[in-house]
Length: 74
Length: 274
Image 1 (spheres, each protein chain N blue to C red):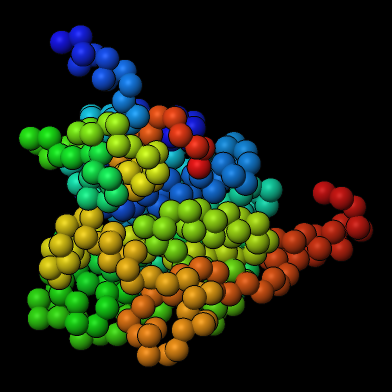
Image 2: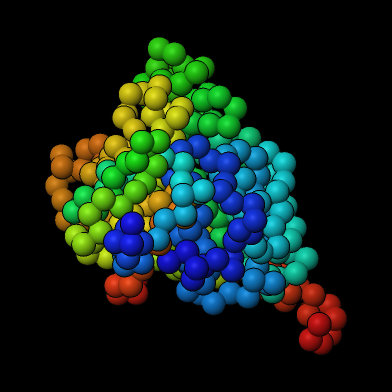
């Protein structure tokens, strides 16, 4: 379980699941498929290491549920 | 990051009421980013809205906000601006609110050229009341009140604003957020009536009735069907068919109403500063 905790700490994307409405915009637009749906259709990070910090998900999340951590300031 | 703009939101009211996939949230974020970029004082900024999905935005924004009657946001905003011209006044309105019941207020506000920043969220339908067609639903589009397709022709609201005398007219969409923020920011800099049409998508009513796919598909439609004015000017006419032109469509400064009004006051008060 410790490895899970470590991955969470290194996550390039912070998600506020309580604000996510499962619209699917973020994982449909993500160019490198970092994001995907969980069993409820809400956003979850599936391939954290591929994130390029392009912030398409953050900019197009209508519910302000996604924050990309690190990367260049837009 | 949301933390950078969090101070402009009433976060205890979030998540907002808009449906999953409604892009109103994206447009509100662009407005807030433009206000932040312009460095406006939160206590000297007023956001006025009418009635409709888009007009719920004032409830989530941490400024002086005013949620008014249907179509009359511009009338209230004109009053606020005239009573205290040093305030920065924004109007958030929808396509039904602004072009239908508020159509008369709209053309006369544009004609007067009061320093207001109007952002119209165009989702092509009356979403809140159950998907009736609006004056900006395209011809042939289906809606609850147009089950066989809309036989009316829609307004081109930007052309209407230009004809009515607005000094700054621009159009953006919720896919190109950077452009939308920039055109709202330029509208703030314009001293006069600044009008921005922001194309929103309503996947729940407009999208479902017209089989346009899910929320992401509707955003991709905006990406693929909007072209900037700079690109449109270079394209031949046949390639522009069916495309929506975005960017700054019109900018022609003219004397601003509250400035002119102050001149009258000064004249009859013997030129004293008030």
